[in-house]
Amino acid sequence: MHPCLPPLDIEPTPSWKGPPLSCDCHFHIFGPYDRFPLDAGRHYEPPAALVPAYLRMAEALGIGRMVIVQPSVYGTDNECSLDAAERFGLDRARVVAVVDDSFNEAALRAMHARGARGVRFNAVSGNGTPLDQLDTLARRIAPLGWHLQVYAEGHQLPDLAPRLAVLPIPVVIDHMGGVRTADGLNGAGFQALLRLLGGPRTYVKLCGYRISSAGPPFADVAPFARALLDASPDGCLWGTDWPHPSLSSWMPEDGALFDLLGEWAPGAAERKRVLVDNPARLYGF
Image 1 (cartoon, rainbow, N blue to C red):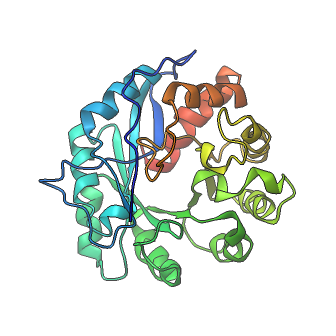
Image 2 (cartoon, helix red, strand yellow):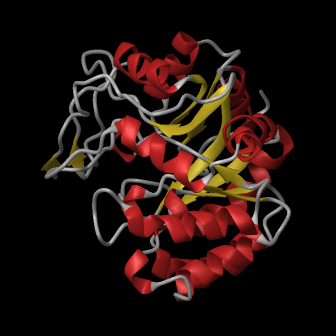
């Protein structure tokens, strides 16, 4: 288990703001730890990252809607994420939960009433649901209209993609597929991601700094983001990944990350599609 840095304690200063009803489709809330203690099986030690701090950052970017993603450090105890959604307001907040096959229909419906709209599989950070439960859980959540979200490394995608393509629900791929930019646009992982996006029910999150091989200012991510936007205009989402968990040596600045999206998608119509229209369709806003 390793400690990680807190987000930068500065107000972001992006060069532009999102259009009304822009949605941050990927971030986490940690704590307060006296109410929501971390799971013993966690693999990193995050500082508390609370609702008021998130809202200050979101306001600076022009974010009006938000999707809390259950982090691995809480295992299948989703109470912190569900509580945060209620604090934000269920008119503008959703949760992507972590569950396993022990969650029955009643438990899932109770979570639905509190804002849950998807289930996350995390094959990177550990302490998550095993991938062999993909099919079982996809069938279980289909009647609720939920989606399945997958965080995997790029090298896992060629084997995973055929399994994901035949699931009966929408599938969301985290962090631009977890590929490495050094592998190039023709790398096996990125090509598998592009094939997945050719289907009608696949989305990808343009939270791209983690795939960078060059590091800040992440210019090497731009060709990958542009390729995804071209391949699936209606399947691209965006998220801050605040508070940038598991990083221990550097911390990105959220305004600069938002400016990257502005560079990848310079047109107002394309920005609205990524930030407003696509999230509203997927998350049911």
